Length: 87
Image 1: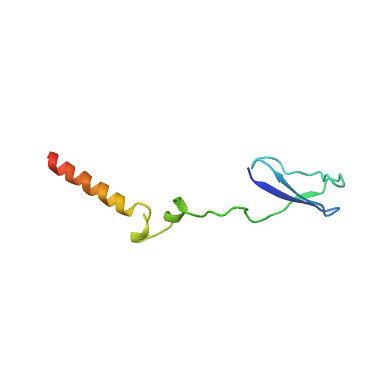
Image 2: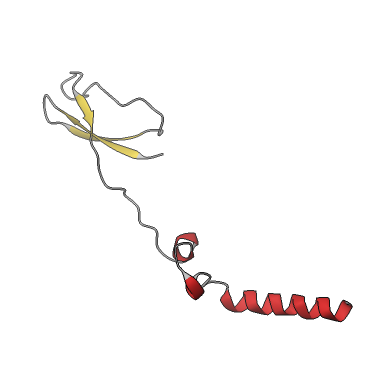
């Protein structure tokens, strides 16, 4: 669930609220109790780091499968050797 930031247009009070994506935006300010609360647009509070899908999905050419290059070639050559031996 994302954390949304809100600011009251009447008193300037700011707050953060953990809400579901489909939840209706808050409207009532907890500080001044007016219905002038507005959702703010802010940057995401997380960063994707380390190995994983995002590291390899958007690469091109021979760099596409960095994590499994050596093991994939070994596995595919072993499979082709086994199929030739059984034929």
